[in-house]
Length: 164
Image (cartoon, rainbow, N blue to C red; front, side):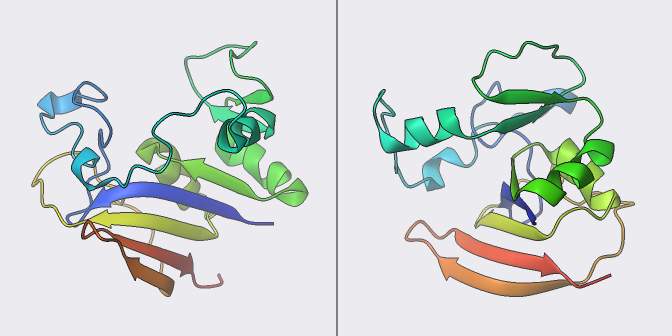
């Protein structure tokens, strides 16, 4: 089975706070919400009964956290307190998707657990902020398997690490 990472990233590698100005202000980061002007509105209102909402509710979710405790507030959710140790067992059972969380992605990358990176690469240079691949990340050769431009200038790219 595969583990796919989905992440918004700027051309200079920043993944910090793509969604809102107050999402992550660590280190004085002032550019929160940088991805919003580039997002294509796909599901502006996810009402009850909408197939997307139903799918998200019914799909098993694994929440990696060092601060949350069970029971989690989301239906069909399981807490992962040590993802690098717990995910290999989950990968034997099903495909997994990680959405966001640069710190989690970095941890899984170091453990060589990521099978695919689906990146929305935004035509934007921020010059500061937390990076998807900071100094010290492991050497990994990637193969581009798909790339599509969006009408907003974003490139949707899929990379797979070469077999190790």
